[in-house]
Length: 277
Image (cartoon, rainbow, N blue to C red; front, side, top):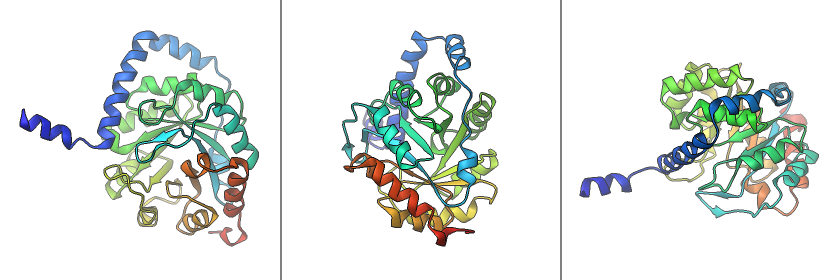
């Protein structure tokens, strides 16, 4: 028994979240069959491709709808995620990220649908995806992109989920945290790689992580800097280290003017000094 308790104590934050995700996933699968889900997905409008915007000059901004986080707890109530997403779009966001994990982030698939039905830019389902069922869910509720976290998947699952995402029209954003995960993402033929500066074990943010890992990502891959953006200066610093895109959540949901905050980040990403990086 003591060994079991010791093992429980050493379970990482990621493992705890994924365990909860699997339980919630099983409940949804019991309610909605995969065939029904595929039918809903196929009735959706055409998928939006984020890559042209992401490959354009300057640095694009993905603005995130995020109520809570494991590191900081409740961030914002966000009673109307669609209205918040509309503010982000008005501020110039190239895409909107929507957290759909419910236990630690307070998100829902209803949030995803509400945002998709409101904005005209690509939408990312940000969750802990471990099954192709969740990819079909993402599409059925209107997502154009889906997050795949390398640390949560073995290599066969990673390759399979990337291939399945692409086959149903989703653009997979493949998240990495260290050198080994970069190698795995590249080997899996990821074309959009996000470097998360947040350590999944300690939940601390180290923005130097991006500068360390970015040179290991091939030039043909679009690179996203995740976590650590508190203002325009961080966008510029990430850009100088090779970021094509920044994903920003906490700074925006805890601020008083999301439209203005996004506009400031977008303006920083379009700074003349960043041309022809």
